Amino acid sequence: MTKRSTWQTPWSYREGWIVVGGLAILGIVWQAFFPSLKAQIPRWPGNLILGLLFISILLGIHFFSKKSAFHKWLSSVPAAVTSAAFYCGLAILMGIIPQHQQSPSLIINLTGLNQLTSSWLFALANVYFLSSLGLATLKRFIPFKLKNTGYILNHLGLWIALTAAALGSSDLQRLSMNCQEGQAEWRATNQRGQVIELPIAIELLNFSIDEYPPKLTLIDNETGKVVTEGKKNQYFSVAEAPFQLLSYKVEVEKLLGEAGLIGNRFERVNEIGSPPAAQLKVTHTKTGETTNGWVSSGSFRQQPYAFKISGEHSIVMLPPEPQKYQSAIRIFTQDGQQLETTLEVNKPFKLGGWKLYQLSYDTEMGKWSTLSVIELVRDPWIPAVYLGIFMLLAGTLFLFRDGTKKRKEQL
Image 1 (cartoon, rainbow, N blue to C red):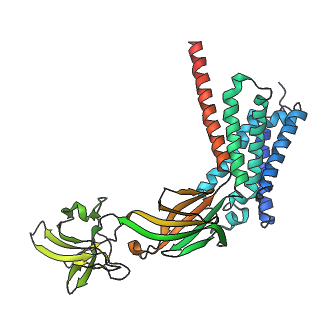
Image 2: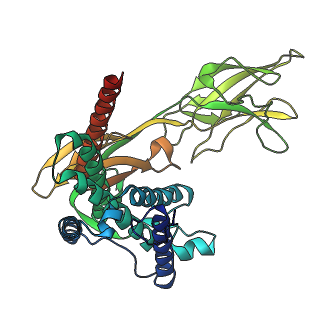
Image 3: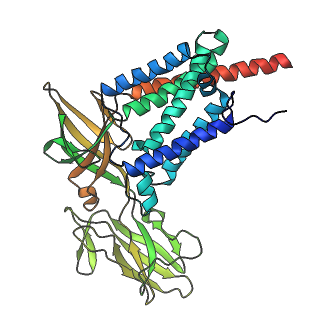
């Protein structure tokens, strides 16, 4: 049997990997020598025009070059496998290499591997994969046959989701707004630090935090480091008392949510910046010696207060961890409407194409923060992405049903 030469039709995996290698080299060289020419998708309506042009090219190839070797190969399994491997390989690199920041590696910075979504390498991989996927879908879609429904839904859904995500990347807005209590704010900053004026204004009415009970731990007086015993947890909540810290039994006799130091003891106070404090009874389990003292986590106004239980060890209180934080806000729209709502983490509020998220706060001030950081996200292409995902899932169900039916017929 005569051995097939490279580029002799029909093309196979060999040509597919050569194409992948060629595109990778082209993308890297282009990125290295022309770094200012980023592969950016134009904004609306430029991205829509680009998408329609891409669809027209695929339809033109399908209808007018259907018998060509190029069309047969690009819609074949080898092209699908190699293009998918190229695309997925870059997606994996995105998870390994930190994106949108300078890398200590000169090679990564030069080749744009730390800016993959705006690199020519990723753009070429996208075009290769979406072209192969699109032509393979058209091959089954036109002419339409009912038995191909699962395949069409599956592949067309994936194509729509990926294409919409790529085209919509230029229209995606992710902004951060710093809101102070009692002040209306309409300016936000994007990821490049640019100030953007919005069609809405937000006034922070109140910011609040629910905290977990503070934790206690044992430290070495000389090093200041936490004393550990193997891999056992040495951080205990005051709510878990009594508990054992190495050779010490710790009991909480008194717990104050907001306290101030008066002499050598803490008293309950109601002032901004008053940290929690606890009066402890510590018993050495081997000697039976008992000591009493106070411990406090401290705050931006008060220093932490440690309880020295021996010449070697002290007990300290860690600042309470936030359990839930939320912002009560008032929203002003351009048409004169006023809306009030409460933002919580992972519970966004939708308004006119925008999603408002509770992002952060002044961590130094803690629960006394009068600043709330709100993230505003607008992605007009997300419905198309969701449509593609829905079609993909529906196609998978069709394929699963057809596969089950065939296995039953073979039995």
